[in-house]
Picture 1 (cartoon, one colour):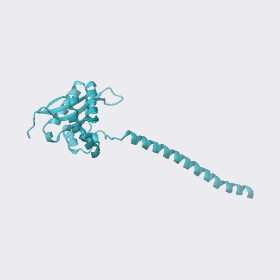
Picture 2: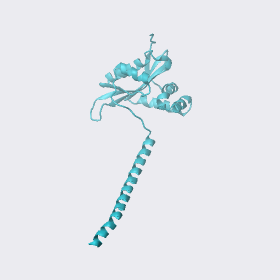
Picture 3: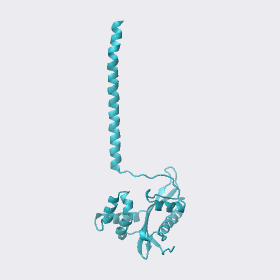
Picture 4: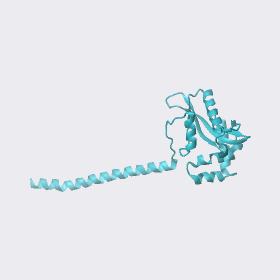
Length: 204
């Protein structure tokens, strides 16, 4: 299989529109309608937000947003972040997320070039591990990182903050209702037991 020459560089705000298209499916988090809505925005707030996000990442020494180029056109992207291996260890790892390659450039070495950058950065920063998070539904991406030697160590799940808050509020209300129900049952049992006790006392 022919592999096209791939070069890599840090992403810049001018890449924002291309990155929105590349990452639209990941941002949709499994909601096609959200993904298509983001991808449809070409000059509105989504691009402005993406430009600001790219600039913020470029200014953070613990993050990198790297693009892979084929014929000087952006063909893929990866987000790298230095993270602690454990809250009780000083070792760090390089976390690979948002790895995405355009459909026409898959199988051309773009993803390999991007993950190689992550590996080199981990070595540069004396990080003993490289970890990755891939969308569970993307079988091709998961097969790819498995072939590279990544093994499954955890299951990453996502929940909306508002949805969690609503769930916890419902659990708290349910707990209060349960407490009131138990109190009512105890009162009823005491009332039912009282006549029997009074009858026994009168007969004596």
